[in-house]
Image 1 (tube, one colour):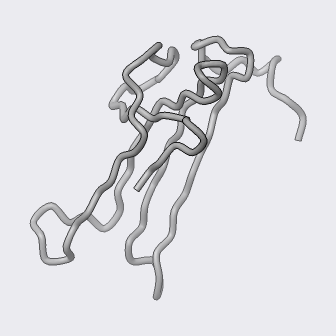
Image 2: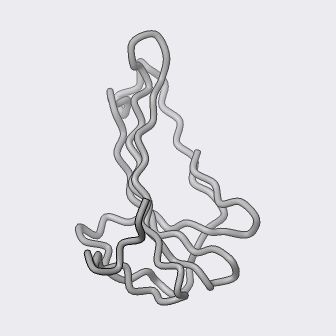
Length: 100
């Protein structure tokens, strides 16, 4: 499951570049269930989402990869890109990356 907290919402996307977040249409959550013997079962699951938080004051994108069988447990890889200015523009600009 992918779920927004504190009123945040998500929209699943198949957009290759995800440069601009939608203004509306966000859902509170997405849930996926696969039985191991199901024909839909995958060894890993990649999904991309737009994210809206703080009542539309923050927009971002989320890339998630689920590994249901990783060694003896499961694993998740997550990449997050956020524009904290309130703009829906999510195009990466190297000169505006915050220091770590």
